[in-house]
Image (cartoon, rainbow, N blue to C red; front, side):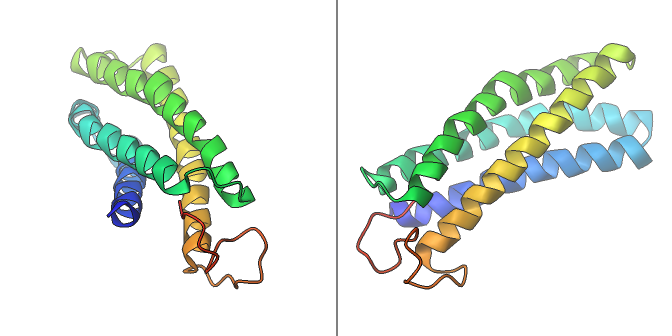
Length: 161
């Protein structure tokens, strides 16, 4: 069951962040002021989905990995606290701040500074989560890796993350 929950939750989390990030960039470049306001006031409604997906991904990943000392699993484990901290301490506060600023029609320096921080932090999480997806695919043998790769647990009986 966990081996099914983990990739689904991870995909939902990554897709949610990608959707927020791409929507922000496209709306900032091509959208009207009204579109920006609407987007910034809509994103916080998606945060519970993101938080739940990331929590399920982290919890199921740690459970699946168990006490494994495989290098690829250890790398995934080291990335997760940074992904979570970046989300909780940077992305969520930025999303809420941008919602409030947009709702009050405050599109000055503060708005665009927070927007820049959010885009950079989002890009970092997208990159780190994508690396975790790649490593997860390697662990399950779906990334074209062979069982001769010493960093991969394909067919070894190790817990997969």
